[in-house]
Every structure is written in C-alpha cells, then in structure tokens.
Length: 499
Image (cartoon, rainbow, N blue to C red; front, side, top):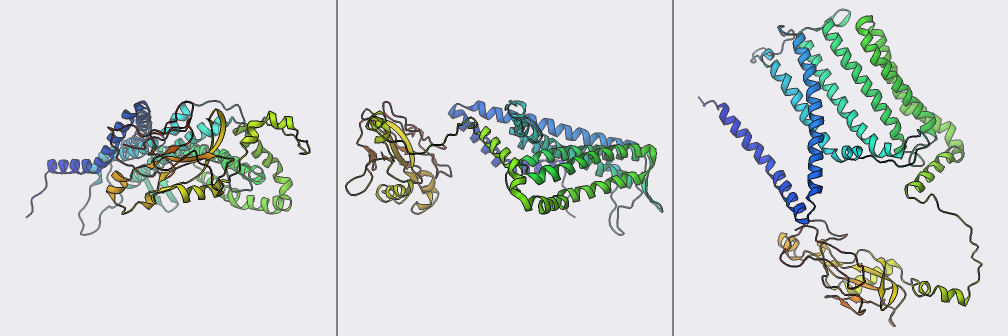
C-alpha cells in the first residue's frame, strides 16, 4: 500500500513549485531594477512599484473585507444547521461541507482579493494619474464637464465600477448558495421562498448591485464622447437625442429597483421587483439598438449634413483646443502680390533653402548609394537645420539603422552579440544636386566622413531607432554609444536601448 504524503512534504513541494513559477518574473524584476539604477532614474522604478503595491493593497483588502463580511453573515445566520441539499452521489465518498464552511469564509474572499489586487495593480498608472488631476480649462459641450474628468476621473470610475460589480456579484452568489444548501432559501409550490434573515441579506446585496449598475450606466453615458461608431469621433445626433436619454432612464430604473429590493423585505411584493427588472431589461434593449437605429434611419439619414453639422463643429472645436490651435487667425490670400528684388534680398535665407528633394525618391537614393551593407537600412528621411560654414542651412538626413531581418545567418550570437547597432547617417542640403542628379552629401560613408567642418560625428553607433525591436548586449567598458555633434550642432542623440 503506497505511503501517504505528509503535510510537510506537500508544503515544501508547493513552495518549490511556486518559486519555480515565480523565478522568471523575479529575475526580470531584478534586471529592470539594475537597468533603472544604472541610468540613475531608480525613482521612476520605485514610484511605479509603490503605486502598484498601494493600488493592489487597497483594492485587494476592500474585496477581501466585503466578501468576508458577507460570508461571515451567511455562516452566522445558518450556524448549527445541516445541509438540506444532498451533495453526494450513490457509491461516491461524501464531502462534509459543514467542516469546511469556516475555511470557505477565508478561501473565497482571499481568492477574490488576490484577483482584485492584480486588477488594481495593472491600473496603477490610471489611479496615480487621478491622484494628480489637473484642470484643462475646457468643458465639453454635451455634459459641460471639464475635459480632465474624461482623462483622469472617468477611467478610475470604470476600474472601481467593474471591481465593485465583481465583488458584490461573487458575494451574492456565494451567500445565496450557502443559504440554499442550508435551507434558508427553499422551493415551495408557490415559487422560491427565503427566511427573513437570508432575504434581508440578499436584498441588500442585490440593492447594492443595482446601485453599482446605475453608476456603471452613468460612466457608459459619458463614455459616448469617445464613441467612434458614427460619422465623427464623439457624440453625434443619434447619441445625444436617442442614446443618452435611454441611458438616463436606465440609471433611474436601476436606482428604483435598488430601493424596491430593500422595501421588498417589508412589502412582500415580489411582483414589483420582477416588474422593475423586466422593465430595465426592455429599456436597455430598446435604448441600445432599436430606438437609435430608428432615429438614425428616419431622422438623421434623410438630412444628415444638417443634423450632424453642430456635432461636427464640436469635434473640430475640441480638436483645435486640444492641439492649441484654436487661436489661429484665418485670412484669404489672393496670391497676386508681386515679388520684388527687395523681397528676395530680405528673405535670402528662405530663398536659399527652398527644398528641391522629395522624401520618397531621396530615401530610395540614400538606400541605393549609402546603405553599403545589406544589413543596414534607411527607414525615413527627416528635415533638420544646422549652422554650416557660418550659414543656417536646412538639411535632409536619414540614420543608417540595423535591420535585424537582413542579418546573415540569424542566430542568438549574431542578433545579440555581433550585429548590435546601426552606424552613422547620411546628411545633405535640401537644395543642391550633383551633375549626375544625385544629392550632395555633407555626411556619408562608413565610417562617417563629413565635408562640412562644423559637422563632426565621433560616436556613430545607433542602438535605439525606428527598427530597434529587441535587446542586445554591449560591452559597457567602451564609451557610451551616442551620436554627438561638434561645436554648435544639435544632431539628436541616439542612445543604447539596453545593456
């Protein structure tokens, strides 16, 4: 007969398995800490860590406490009772749930608390942003709420609403099952009945659920301003005149049902509660699909431009406000103004920097004459301005990045240790061509050679760019790999993406 595994052995086995599962995450956490510490920005790392810990603690503890109190009440009310509903099958060993009721009072809230803690920890940035809300000095034209409400407050309300619905739902179901098993809820010829204590408890939980449902409907009503289902992003005619009124009706009905559930304990009128729930379902169905479709079909579609114009104006106004271009002055320019020699002399710098090259053909040209190696690639052409030979010049440039897809013999050694970075860039003026029709290049080749004395590239390695997609290993004993301009230049730095 096989030996029975001891509790101590099971404990050590479970602990070892847990450590094995958590080892990769622990190592990743430690590497991230070393990385932030090496860059001298460990404050960013600890801020995120503290926010995740506090968010998880608050959410997890709240979930545990609410679920624990409800199960404690259910167990307390039915204390000393036997199981009424049979839980075993003929020939199968019986499971005495009475012996484990006290454990379930801890197990269910703990599991719920852990799940909620993980959810809150994942929304740490949302919660942290809400704690540092700032005013946007702009109110939306539909609900007249400050824009900061939609950026900071509404996302937090969504997290809290979803968590509250989950916590109350689990508490209601677990408490109801316990009452059912112990006979506090019973089935009789007239329907389903419950003892007063169980009825009060479950009615309160149901009432809280409908209050949270009303709160969730309030959130959904304001989230219409994010809607992208209509002609424009945001609230359109159908949303304002069809969907929002039904949202308000659903909010009111949910609150009424919540009060009916509480008063049901005293009134004994189940028909009112059932009627209210049925009406809520009908209003939700009609308001979410049928009525908006009818309004759009017969009111909006026949004269869509007229109906949607005010909302299009709202969208344009909000967009201008967001990009801070709402103060732009519009003027009609005929283009018939005559150009004089004085105008040319006054705007000599502009005339001399008129761009002749188009981005697409120039990128193709750079790729043909300056990639040099098959594993290098030019991804885009940018425009910048530098002082060259004493003049402020407009230039077009492109970084020579490493294309991991074109590395010869792709393996871990080549991708991580050997081919680790791009190299240099190609830079030329916007308004010059050679006799062969090619662009004039101030910076070119490998290693980078500069024909302009004001441009000097001493560290051309590019470890972070548009094509960078995975980590590489760099010898930290050599100089930090950046592109740095000489003297008055301001070529953007490109730093190593991970050591």
